[in-house]
Amino acid sequence: VLVAAAQAAPSGGSMLEIGAYIGHSAVRLAAARPGTRVATLEVDPVHVVIARNLIAFAGLGKEVSVWTGYSRELLPLLAAKYGRADDGGGFSFVFMDQRGSRYEEDLAALVRLNLLRPGAVIVADNVLKPGAPLFLWQVCAKGGGFDTEVVSLREFAMPVEDWMSVSIYQPPVMSSQSPPAELLQLNEAAAEKKVTFW
Picture 1: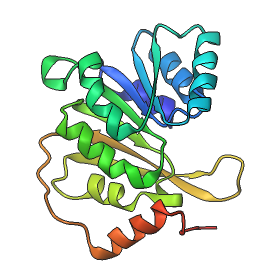
Picture 2: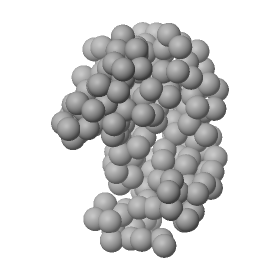
Picture 3: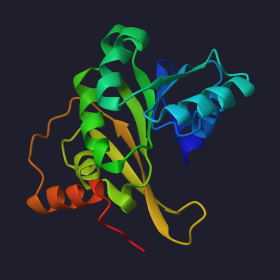
């Protein structure tokens, strides 16, 4: 799903991964679209060191940059490095693989900071467990500015179902409805990892 979505993203712009872990997905993204810059964000400094070494070993140090810190702090800094969509920069592909309860806030920041190019593809992993209910509500809402498909997959190394969502950004974002209270509670439980689906 990840590689196919990256290859289907519009040309131009860079790619962004939020949640690098050890850099495996960043290497796959860079290989899927040779010559396209990839920014990957990771909060854990040990994972950053491993990711940078894996990326260097793959010979992709010029294409992939690993940023250390929280997405809410790093996203505003990316505009200076990668440009804004209205200036011909920004991201044509985003992979969200951090805590699902952060997806909605990070997507809102990407839109607010004008970092998403029209037609950008946004892939979000693990939207069923531990879950990303507010994010799914946002990208599936009518007038929300996204055309979304949810894909059912088997979780890696586990015999359980999980979902990935693949969304295409179609500005302008019109929906300003508040999510139902039940979704807010579910999102809070997912953030605290109180929800399990197996």
